[in-house]
Image 1 (tube, helix red, strand yellow):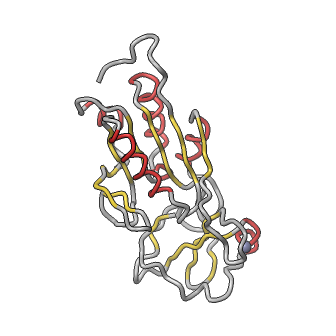
Image 2 (cartoon, helix red, strand yellow):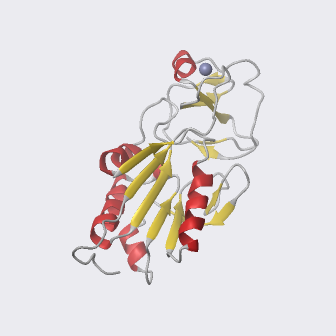
Length: 215
Ligand SMILES: [Zn+2]
């Protein structure tokens, strides 16, 4: 890995955020495909993907092997261990450590690696994830993804609710895996009004996606 030569184009750090089901992982996979077609070399990273393995999977059925970002993984070291890396696709970046977000900024500024990060902004309480907050602070560009995720009332779905035993939870661990077949925890996207009111809509208690997510 070589340092950026003087006068070279600046690399970019971009953060794409939105609630569950807004197409983040689909866009991450599409972006990887586009860059690869241009002959660029990149790595795809994820953490707690819904597949449960080191893969980026999207709810519409695309999938790709990916590197699982453990808390101890040094992202600068990861890139340095490869021959030439032009870009990183960082899915589920909201679950990375704050230190890893700093490492992403280092890769952009010192090594000219483009970083495209995807993730949730806030947890089930509507409180921002620390890594997402750091991305908001450091990113060159921040984009809200709003791909027709609707609350049961028809308003745009902006926040993730954690549902435990049919009721909306307001307290608990920031990250709990849910939406597995037998998990007592599931997640539901709500508009701000109904997230604040804790109203899950009719019939919401029975629906299950059968897929994993960690919000
Ligand atoms: Zn609503």
